[in-house]
Length: 255
Length: 72
Image (cartoon, rainbow over all chains, first blue to last red; front, side, top):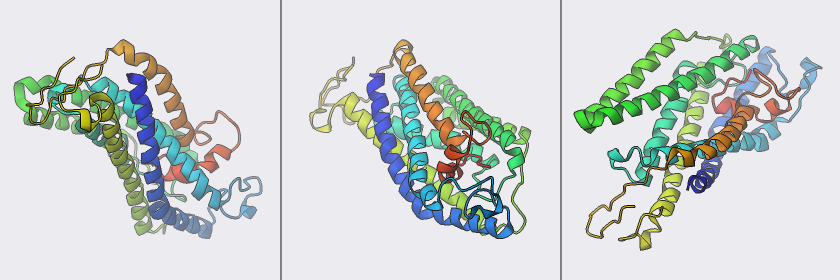
């Protein structure tokens, strides 16, 4: 059963990735191009565009390749991986979060929403997505470690909060248990955000509006991805777990 | 397994809890592969490198930026 759900997760990830790629092409690429243009105009060249500035750093792929098949590959691998991991989380959660009375589609939608918050939105408030030209190559190691560490803290805090909600549910009821769990997650993440170092590596005169638009596009990609993943997976999982809608009335739950 | 009756208005949506032992093999092999794939999109040839050069970094460059990973 886990294997079947995993396949369905990959399939949902495939669909979500294609939609996210479309969104990224339309709303994200223009911002990347503008950021690279800024980068080139200020001479902070690093291997995009013309390679004359640094002979040893010659252009490996054209911008067209990076924005086309390269972006497609990146988004698809990300989306497929998230789809698979999502299915594994769903397989673990489905009988265990039953007290909340959600069906497969409701549970998948809830988990996708929580994943969007825990994997991207909240860690991104501390370490947001940056366009080309933003970021000092000297700190890439430290920033990468902290980025993944904060993501890990966020996911762990979310798991803790969900378990807290489950434990409190019988005593406090759904509303108060969920509120307290949300408060717990928020408190852990505020503490982590205060404890983690801050980086400000936006170059002088980098357009603030471009930075904002790039980050909004980046958020949009993730919203499209997780919404599509949650809804598509929920639909696929329901068909598997409860049978196709036509024959569902009075049907047995397949084990 | 629960049998749902046609009379329940919204249908019983309770789902079986899969035993951990059934999920674990998938979680270990699948999970590791998927996390390795994420690593290649998100971090390879940025902060750390399994392969020398910049081809992986440059190929997924735009995706890495837009998906929120630190790129350079």
